[in-house]
Length: 253
Length: 305
Image (cartoon, rainbow over all chains, first blue to last red; front, side, top):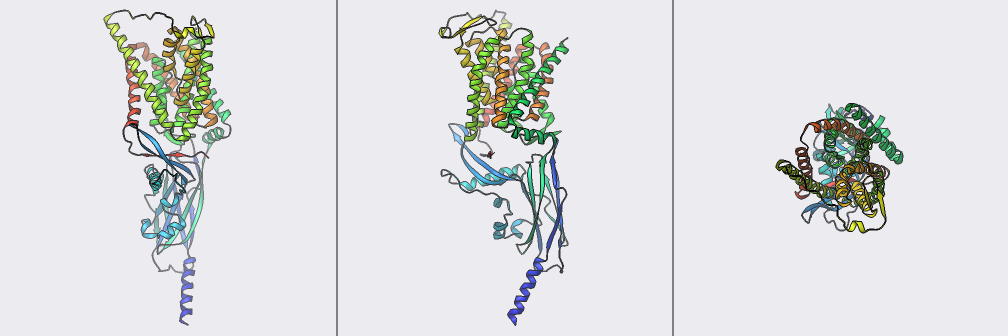
C-alpha cells in the first residue's frame, strides 16, 4: 500500500505543477519603425492561473526573454600584419539573434539548472549556434565570446535592467528597452515558470516589428527593384543639383 | 531629432547628417572640390556601415557635380569631347572597381582597402596642396612672378590614335586620357568619391590641359562615372541609402551657398592651407586607426543570404 500512496503523492505533485498555467500579454504586438523611430519600450505582463492552492515545493521564479530575428554572422579577428591591423581570421556563426534580452526574478545561475538551460536555450551563450570553425582557427569559442561581448556593449544582448517583478507568486511583469537600431522581423517573447531550477511551463507570443511608411517603401524598392531604386537615386541627385545651381543663379542676381 | 536610415539600419541625428553635408558643402563652395573624400570617412565615424557610406557618398557627389557643371557650361569652360574620352575610360575603370569592391567585401578586406586608399590619396593630395599653397603665399609675399611651365614634348605626344580637342587646344593621343579616366573610375568605385582631387592634377600635368577648362571637364565626367557607380552599387549591393543621401545633399546645397559667400571675402591661399590641413587631419585619423592596436580586435558582419 505504501508504494501506491507514494505513487499517488507523486501524481498529485505533478498534477499540481501542471495546473500552474501562464496567461500573458504584451503592451504592443506590432512595433512600427518610422523615419523618426527612437526605440521603444515593451511591457510583458501576465498572471499564473491555478485551480489549486500555491504549491509549497520551492519558490516560484519567472524568466522572460525577448528574441529578435536570427541570421548568420561572420566574426572577424584583426592581427598585426606589416605594421597595420588587418582582418586575418574569421568564423561564421550559423545563427545569432539580432536582439536578445533576458529578464528574470533572480540571477539565472540561481534559478535555472544547466540541463534546463541546454534544453530550453535560455541564456545568451545558448542562443548562439556555431557549427564548425575553419581548420586554421583553433580558438573558435573566442569568436563567439567576442560576438556576445560586442553585442552586449551595443546594448542589443543582455539582461533587462529592471528584471522581472513577481507579486504574490501570481502577477508578473518585465519591461524591455528596444534600441533605435532595431532590425525588422518577428520578435518572440517567451515566459518560463520555474521551481527548483526546473522549467514547469512556458508560453510565447510574437511581436511584429516592421518598417512602415517611407522606410518600408525605400527598403522594399531597394531590395526588389534595385534598378528603379538606382535610377530614382540619380534623378533625385540630378534634381537637387539642378535646383542648387538655379538657386545660386537667382541669388547672384 | 533622430532619423532611422532604412538601408544602413542605424538611427542617427538628422542634424548631424545635415551638418556633415553642410560642412562639406561649404568646402565645395570654397574650393570647388566634390567633397566625397570627406563625406565617406565622416560617415564611417558616425557608424554608417562602409558599404553604405561608399555607395551613398557617390550619390551625393552626383548632385554636387551637376550643380557645379551647370555653372561651368554657362561659362563655356567644359571640354565635352575630352570629357567623353575620359568617361569611356572612367566607365571601364568603374566596372572593374565595383568588381574589386565586391570581391574584397567577400574576403572581409574592403574596410582595409578603402582605408588604405584614403590614407594614401588624402596624404598625397594634402601634402601637395599644402606645399603648393605655402609656396604661393611665399611668392605673394616676395612679389616674384610664378614660374611658367614650358610646353614641351614628352612620350605622351608620340602615342598613336591622335584626336583634336578644340576647347582645350590640344592634339594628343586618346590613350593617356583613357588611362587617366579608367584609374579615376576605379578609385571612385572603391572609395565612393568623384576623384576630382586626382583628376584635376592629372589633367593639368599629364594631359597638359589649360587650367580654366580643367575643373568643368573634370566635373562633367565625374557626373557620369559617379552616376554609374551609384547605380551599380544600388543594383549589386542594395547599399545606396536614399534617406541618408537626401539629408547630405540638402545640407550640401545650403553649405555650398554659404561657402561661396565666405570664399568671396577671405584670402584664398590661407583657406587652401586650411583645407590641406583638414585633408591631412582626416588622413592621419584613418592612418592611426590602422596603426594603433584597436580596443576590440573582433568585428561583426552580416552574411548576405
